[in-house]
Length: 165
Image (tube, rainbow, N blue to C red):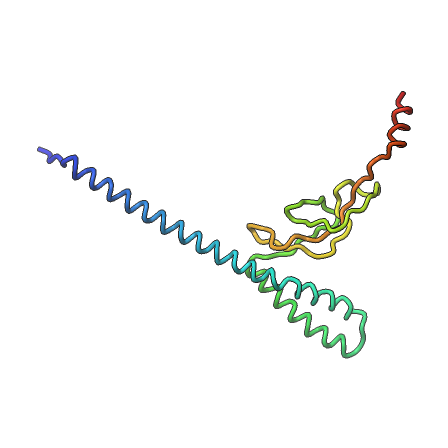
């Protein structure tokens, strides 16, 4: 003969198990949110160092043409720059190349637009400042010059219409 569990006791066990599952889900959700906040904070702090890294890179480009002791100093600064880049890499932040690619507002900030027919419309012609991204978001968009096809003038449009007729 089997013992039957009263309905009230069965409901109590069900509620208890649901509460345990809900508590575990909340713990996991809070842990995930905490990790996202830490990552976001690190990325924002690193973003503040990016202009200094840019300045290092620019200065080292000029140092390549220098002579003597300046080149010795440049070697030391290159070592410091590589340490900064290593920190970026450890945190999953990488720079990305933009020249020759299509403009994407998620990754690029257009600071100049030039009308030309030599490049496809929306092509990035020049990168003023490198962009950086992590696995989840753009840390700093690249500042770029973008090609745009010129709009035809009224005279050109009328000429085009008469040629078709």
